[in-house]
Length: 305
Image 1 (spheres, one colour):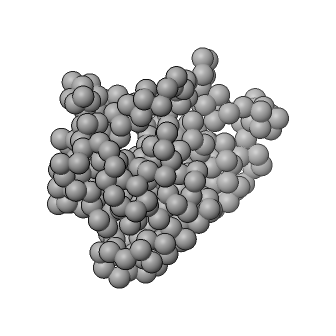
Image 2: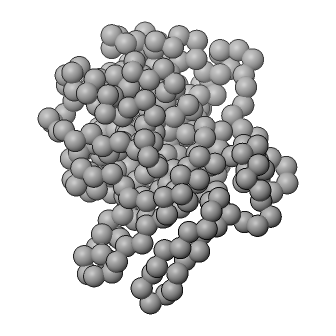
């Protein structure tokens, strides 16, 4: 997570420990902050490379599917599996009205790029691995999101434990720490309905509408979490971040129930951190350590071509 700063000093009183002063570092001017990208701000020295470019649709598709398979393996390692539930979708770079998704009933930790299924907006399998079906509920959720948001390249949804637990409150995550500010403001949404497994198109449309035009992550009441991004890396990183944030929120709620007061991130600090660190290039890079660790651990088995 990138270090944070704000443009003005703010003081928040904290019982027993005195005030916390949040201010912009003296050696960084506002002009310098505004002129730099998120990656330039976090990189001391050479700037981290961002999202790579690809010479052909084929090369781009191969790269996307391999990262998609690794994202599933990261989810498996982090314990997000639950029977046949859970899915990631990635919009095809050549045919944007189709998207790739995982086959139903195969463990996240075993998935390879060659396992993925290409489906169109009507739910018909049109490419890739057609030996297994896709998840019907997953199709309705992801197709609705992709239709409503042309900027969304990838979406992730699983039944992760802390996401499910926090979803029972049907409340947004609070700005309790620097990390969760990546879901500041309109970047976070709550879907306040639950009608069982999503088997109706109307439910998918309502869900997509609740995400809104700027949503990056959403809490689905009595269900779990959904995140989106301009790369599968961004969507997957945001999912891991939202799940961890639910875990932290639950721990804070338990402490608060015993009389320990909450101290929130100041509004200006939350806004500054979101605006200076939460862009597609930076969020792509945030996921690379987990992705590279998984690639090393599986010895390239995620490719499967």
